[in-house]
Length: 390
Image 1 (cartoon, helix red, strand yellow):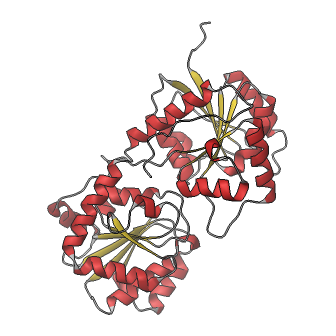
Image 2 (cartoon, one colour; image 1 turned 120 degrees about the horizontal axis):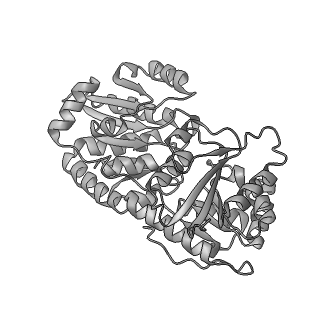
């Protein structure tokens, strides 16, 4: 049988269920040039519902591990050797141990440990720090989707900066196009939103870290001076009931559209006048990129890579986290000055174009090729600055 000359990359995740890391992986695998490399996916747990969205020729092998996952690394190493994988890419910190152990058992493969950020106030455990340092000694390369993530890896673990590559998230510009006034009006009619109102919008899971309470409090402050405001919240999650209770308590629930989890996020964004993110913690926010691609002016908290993505008064307005008054003031400024909304929205679209998905795909593929080509475990993998846009 003729040997396939392509490099094989094995991606390891807990499962392909729902989260941003997993959705990004599926999007990448659907976009890669598969003439350049072979890609395989292994999940430590069950495959998850997103496995159905993988390209047919990739598939997903689920190890169905439970509890302490004893023997997982051995099973993973067998797959690595069977597939002749040149690279094991652990896509999140929960997979680091199994990937590292499998790499030791399969020394011909190179190891990449992926990191997508920690929640605000959370630090690496001593176990994770020891594991990361051992992986660095073993010759692992670290990959993160944000500059803030790189800072966390260097500051909290002490990793060498040249062992960490930033591979930013990308956005499908064709899926999030700016819409004409006519289209915006049509979409507002479709979603039951007032055409002459000022629509403030946000998208995300209804979880505590996203600080929806700050957004609702800011909205209540805005309504005292501008009665045309409407707030659209797209998403669902465990905080939904308590947030509705808060909105009722503040007397603003009748001005909030609780859209729930939606598949039509591009159209929901297109119906908004301004996008707001009040999260306490981000790495590189995909939904912020999507809002910017939609030519929306954005108001976002100064967390993660928000400030380097939507630069202050160039593509958006950045505010301190947890400060509802600052959020209300920033949105109020955009409400009062429509020409500022247009200028920031146009600049946001141009900025999002720098993160177009084809650019991100190429960054990943160049990264994998250079990791596979670097065989010396005794020194750091020297990687050029890829087309990251700090």
